[in-house]
Length: 110
Length: 112
Image (cartoon, rainbow over all chains, first blue to last red; front, side, top):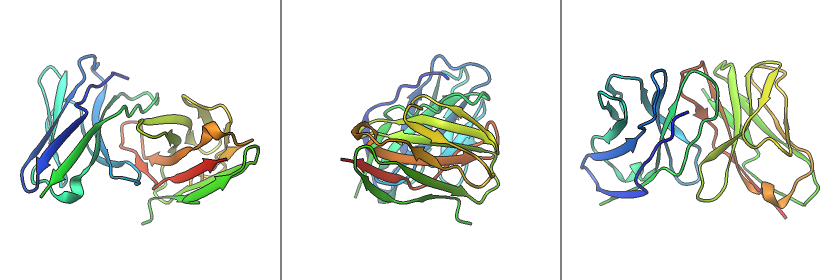
């Protein structure tokens, strides 16, 4: 599985869009980009995933660059409940290890 | 729909004791796995299963056993608890190869 690089932390104002970057320059052709988040003392929560195309669901949007070496998770209207650690993960079809890394601590402020 | 259910939520053990962490899912998922999360760190894979009767080791399997007799249940056994196994344990399941994982709320285990 490809390694990912994320900023350690970022702040966002409530009601504004939060843009979370992730670098995965060693991604291979069959590897998906997944985003999870973990709110304090809870289990990780799936947000969104994609392969090549941009994706959107009720929680967020995922923008993947054309060369697939980086991606951005967009929370369109951040709320206080979006304060969490956000993990960007790259993995392929093989089972392998789901390496979560350290993630980005996002703090949404009023 | 309960999703992934883990019990107990909290447990304190003495060194050398054994115990079983329970995990059950009601989504008919074939794939299940166990992770541990230490403070300030990401999740590390302990054991996983791709179906009933099939299990394999992950990144940190030593000191843990698993079995998968049914699709729904995937218990994790600590054979002889050690302080180094103090951690938060998460169970997860997923439907297929490229499908996202669904996690339980974890078991917080302290070993004295």
